[in-house]
Picture 1 (cartoon, protein in one colour):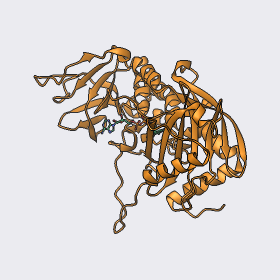
Picture 2 (picture 1 turned 135 degrees about the vertical axis):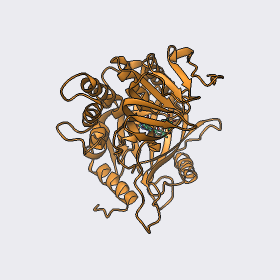
Picture 3 (picture 1 turned 45 degrees about the vertical axis):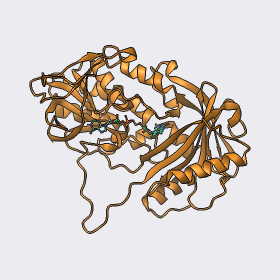
Length: 396
Ligand SMILES: Cc1cc2nc3c(=O)[nH]c(=O)nc-3n(C[C@H](O)[C@H](O)[C@H](O)COP(=O)(O)OP(=O)(O)OC[C@H]3O[C@@H](n4cnc5c(N)ncnc54)[C@H](O)[C@@H]3O)c2cc1C
């Protein structure tokens, strides 16, 4: 990507899988461009999915991200039943039966799916062919349908979607309570290693996914953590020591120490060149309630309050949100940006309910069902973890 030398925008066709996507570095106010139908802030999986669905329905769509070419680096997974039906099979790297271990082993009855993350990214990028992508950072929304960009300039659109994850740049932060120090966020933190499947076999037999192993085999007291083990394709397994939700998040060095101790106890030696993965994200994000802006993805939040998952919900709901925008931007008695936004917001709410209960129930899906209905032990553990994180009393 080249910065435009003369203050104008410069577009360039991306090579490779994102071929046909045009991206621009904002060098000067964009007020002379035709009004957009939809402006998506954030180029993570949720932003790309909803931008692609909007453009695919003929809406003039743009997407803003400070680093739109940065690859996704996390290993993403979900319950197989949560996958959108039209997602190509090629974006799934591996599937496995879910299992959890507490006092005894529980077959969860659901299959777990792990994404082939580069394939998912290519799939989402192919749908951005008609989306204008700006390499820029949104700072705030100075008025309905307007988004200010860092360094000056703004963009306008009939419908603005904040899909910028935990950052929620258009989220309209609520002031803290007077006289009270700001509380640290409740976070999910985790540390993992990717090892050959045969190395992981003592804990994750072939064809299985270990959703949660709560045995304290790491040998430490204090805050409970569990092992999560999933095949990631290519004959490899990701083994992750996870703290579900804690305020503040359990430090990653503690998780690393516990993981290595747990694996050693099961005779698993981690190869010195094993890839590692660090997870840290908030799980008590404020609901996105900024007037005139639709929150989507982890910014909505579509984040499940216990598991922290949001990706499958975002992929599934991107189409219905785009449908709602199309229906209500079209001419008609209740047409217009406000109607489109309101309708899109309702499409994120549980069916038959109003816009006030955005998302998390809808985002729960089979993941939550598996965790919360599938086993009483898991239900209690999830509740305890969540309650501890948000400082609520809790009945065991
Ligand atoms: C290591 C790891 C593993 C995870 N595993 C899973 C999993 O298995 N399943 C699952 O469902 N979830 C998982 N999560 C949670 C995961 O973060 C979310 O599900 C997913 O990334 C949310 O996608 P999103 O597009 O909503 O937000 P994000 O992926 O956070 O994307 C937000 C985007 O907004 C951009 N942005 C930020 N600020 C601005 C701004 N001011 N202006 C413009 N753009 C901005 C960022 O650059 C980013 O590209 C994992 C997270 C981590 C860290």
